[in-house]
Length: 152
Image 1 (tube, one colour):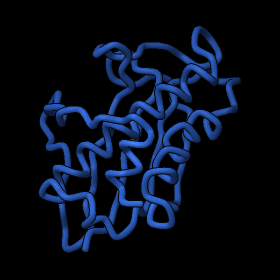
Image 2 (cartoon, rainbow, N blue to C red; image 1 turned 90 degrees about the vertical axis):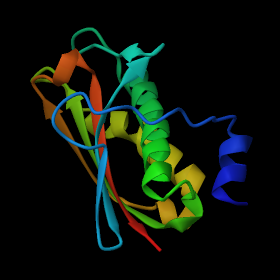
Image 3 (spheres, rainbow, N blue to C red; image 1 turned 90 degrees about the horizontal axis):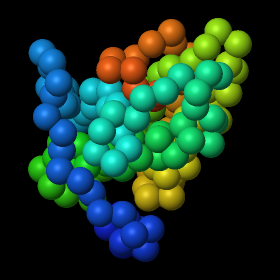
Image 4 (cartoon, rainbow, N blue to C red; image 1 turned 180 degrees about the vertical axis):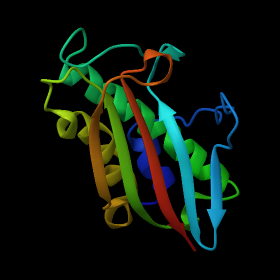
């Protein structure tokens, strides 16, 4: 099954690529490697605000991370010139989770993105990853994730 068939089977329509909110680009390519800037969690088109361990649950943030994965795939498609078949491998995800000092489930939050990337890209979606708890994220977002991928 192709990436596009998997997206369709999961009832996922890729959104338009977001515009940068500051002085950066949404992705940069060096050789066959493409680096996607951090994408913030969104809910109903607005920043999904919250802090894990305070007012946001692990399950809510896992859904936020899944939503970010969809946005990352849309940006990756733009980086591929519109053709996700050019993705040779998703290399790494880095996840930042807006957390209280005692919250320790950042890895479970990040599974929301990792699991979807695996479903969509199969073997090519198996990636390395880091998940960090941070004191705050831009605009109060509960999660931010960036991606590194290799293109053919």
